[in-house]
Amino acid sequence: MTPDLLEAGAQRLATHEAAARHATESGGRQAGFARPAVPGEVDVTHGRILYLEDVSVSFDGFKAIDRLSLDIAPGELRCVIGPNGAGKTTMMDIITGKTRPDAGTVYFGSTIDLLRHTEPQIAELGIGRKFQKPTVYEQLTVYENLELSLRTDKGVAASMRFRIDSAQADRLAEVLHTIHLADAVTRQAGTLSHGQKQWLEIGMLLMQQPRLLLLDEPVAGMTDEETVRTAELFLSLKGRHSLMVVEHDMSFIRRISDIVTVLCDGSVLAQGTLDEVQADERVIEVYLGR
Image 1 (cartoon, one colour):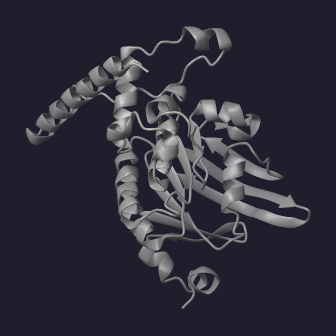
Image 2 (cartoon, rainbow, N blue to C red; image 1 turned 120 degrees about the vertical axis):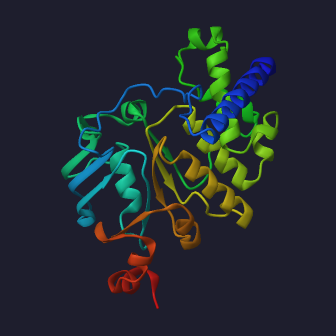
């Protein structure tokens, strides 16, 4: 661990944020507050960061995804809801390369055909996925979990020689600030609350600088306070990243999402604002109840 570099990074972050606030308050652009560049630009000429068209997949005769078409704009925060078995997890498996569809098209940006790439390649392209149960290195500190997640050469020789530099320290300090764990940097991950572990895992994804985040039931098991802070976290990421959030907590969805997609039987049943889909008789029938 290198606390001096981390402290220096935190100080630089504070300076940048002060400059950003000053620029905003004076009506100018946020010059001097540059977010870290995301490796590998994605062509979004068509105005979509993610595009699925007529995607289908069956398992032992059961059609889990049935001609699913869906698209997400760059910087959008999209919530996806639906009953159990609607195809939400299978959809994310297809996007991340874990499951290959029987038919259809899946594009990242305007030019990257995800069906031609493996799971590791898709992660490298800039798609990060978080499962419902947090997976962190519980014996390591918060700092060490984030440091291990840096985009670096993971070969044995390179890992032996690795020393965090000032730019990486800045990145780590920013992520700590973003995920509300700057005060827990030296704590073992295993001692964190459930919500804090969820934030740490999100931070580990952010260290990879993804363009698109897929988040599966991120607030399940959280306290009310942790849920509110998670909503704040997601809203702070919106615009800098695109997010697809699969969730059942309607109050949480109301806090964060402009557009909600309802899946049922492997395809889109309805889409619109939360008020619009909650008023849809089909959604009430298959998911919300009366």
